[in-house]
Image (cartoon, chains in turn cyan, brown):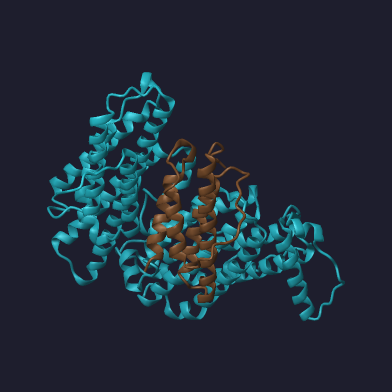
Length: 486
Length: 115
């Protein structure tokens, strides 16, 4: 005999939340058809549970409360009807984990129906509990929709990869229908996300839940990043923002090397140019951005905050790169990347990003050299000043014994203006950064010629816009501008 | 920047611990990436973890205590799993708005970091 479930409504809701989290952490493409078949049941159970919760007393809650869950249920029903009409993903077993979520929510609804549905929520504590329950239900739908969307995305990529070895009609149908499901789930996720979040949540969740795919997404992410990085650093050039900017630029250089390597391996990028010029200059640029990021990191404290718009833009760059170039924890194989996107187009977008990186490097150097408001924690600044002086002494420049940070400041680890040796070291590092970024831009100029000479995969003209070329001197002739030391 | 100034003390303390774990995980990922070289995919994993820690920090009031010893654990996936486990204790309320996207971000990172 099955043991009776003794859990409370709160515990059941936590169980449902926990299961959707597990689902997201383990989501895999092969699970997508079963998950899509079962998702409707989860939404229906959530909607029924919502309906059993005692209604707000005298309209004490937001008017959007009931509307959102009704819209979500309607979206889910339309999605289900479309799946039946188009015969995809078709009949098959359900996803047991999502089924468990649906059953858990139904169990909670039964519990409320039997014991508490008649209660009028006049007590503020009861009303707060009900609000918390509604939020937890919506949160579960939000996480669940994201899980199904991740699995569907992986499934579509798996099927697209199968094009290299030939695929059945059924598999071919899975790509457009899978994409359609992803878009619908993205809309669902966004609506549920608007309920559980406020302005902050909407800003922080990013644009990755909808929008373009492949090289178009990569292009938009890189352009969006460039604009946002300039905006943030112009308005608020703090070490925390500079740290994220530098780490993201290092990530772009890493991704460029991986994607261009795939391009070279599959004939979309000139192999000799990649091996002889692009790869070494990209590596050097990546290391220079990393070196500078390490210095900015030393100047941050645990409490330092980063501009959320910059965080959002960095997240979108990372998501766009992952869509093209990653396979779980490592880089996708070159032929896999080539199966996902037109690597010649991707190379053009990266070439533009490597050009704009030079300007961001110059902005970074100007801040390092000229911004008098740069500060850092006393202990880290003292340590760095002594290390930089030690290095200068090793090179034969012996300085006077100067105490750059007072013992009192070090003891209390106060925030102090960066000492002169730290600034000098920072300017040295950013000089190297500008030079390496310029070298990478020069090396990447060949990508323009190579991709212009090649027909696109569809046999049409390349789709990349030509209007957003970096202004200024031609890459090969550009001399990196230098600024005076403080 | 928007912060949830009225966040409950317990939830705030837990969220601060999540932020610390994520920050440490990002530092570990970047350290491993630098040891592997400029083409290591861990550079981008570190970036993802760092942006998640920025999301967590943004939800905290300005005077939140974010100091403290770094955790002894060095395994990146385990650090991320620990951060996810901590978020389970944070209620999903108006005062903790932003927790749902953070949970999704951490779960995505766990999946990415697990071979």
